[in-house]
Length: 546
Image (tube, rainbow, N blue to C red):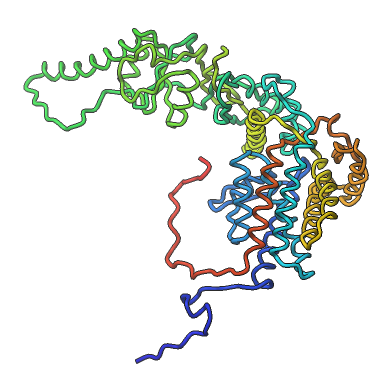
């Protein structure tokens, strides 16, 4: 009988073979901090208008070239458990605000870097966490006093353009004015009189060819498809939408038909045809000009659609059907029936257009009741258009937040330096050891103007010194870093119209501090043995993006 080898006493005794455990400052805390620092360092070089692009090749070998933190984080399969916490905080920011994901990662990394210095001085993790939480409380108290202005009228395109410009600038520096015009027009045109603005109502259609300046906003929807029949144009059209195929109806049960003569055979097939014709004629009699189907349009049905002059469009995506029904105000019908007038949608113009060598079907609604707008992006490469889409997505999310809370803060690092100045003064009033953590929190905020400067090729320390000097006076609260100057210099953000969304800063500070303090409070990492067996197979041709 084989002898069992006794395990070493301690935690390893109660865990399976192959389990790992790290504990204490050296093994757990410093390890976590260094992993998060590395991750934040990667994201820091992508911060701001002059941020560097990252080339990411994901697990299914799809390539991304972007400086958008949200995309980089989503496509990188981060394994480290502590870095994963920062990723989750960043994803929460993306869900809450839709912009400022990089802000969370960079700030959390800077806070942990500062915490490491304090730990080496002998301050405990509990005192650092308390200090950070006190600093956050104070920062959120100071933040509303720094608000530069508030937007009350969301329908004023000029006012909206002023504030959306900065968010587009951080992704597409140099193209911001043109893209700003597109997004502002699209968002304001579909803003409902009552209720909230829905981000999903701004659609983006990317069509290869031409240049960015040929991009346009279409009030209504655009699909990269061709029509099914011969009719390619309809004006002031009533629309019916079916989620099923338009074809001869298949019976639910199988049956046997006994045919005894040739006449019976003829009358049997003509019976099916006449039934289909009567259905399509009944639909045409209601005044419908366009039929949209969620499945295939059969040859026989197509013949009758052409006969009665109906335009047929096929959409494979059920989501597209829902959006189109919302756009034209129609009801999606599950089977071929004659629609009532309430179930029909209306569109000013449905037509086929050619952009480059791509044929599109456009549903245009020029009236005030248009609920969906589509931004048609043109560009030379798919990667370029994807990056433009991300910039527009950030701007649309900014508009959504602006309709909830129209407050804006000075941008270009001005808010961060003002917070740092006031928090340093606050740290001097605290009696305990947490004053060191509050002071380090203030120092961590310097990372933003520093990153903006370093990514633009100027000396970050010079800029931070100049900004502190300007912020010492009451009049200098809105002074930020001038990204366009050749030498290190500052600019008045209120005159340059550089504004940051209040909501993005508010939630960004909360999530970053939450992630940093959670990581600091970890003193042991216990990893169970991984489950054996092969990884689940990826479906052939599957793509997360599609």
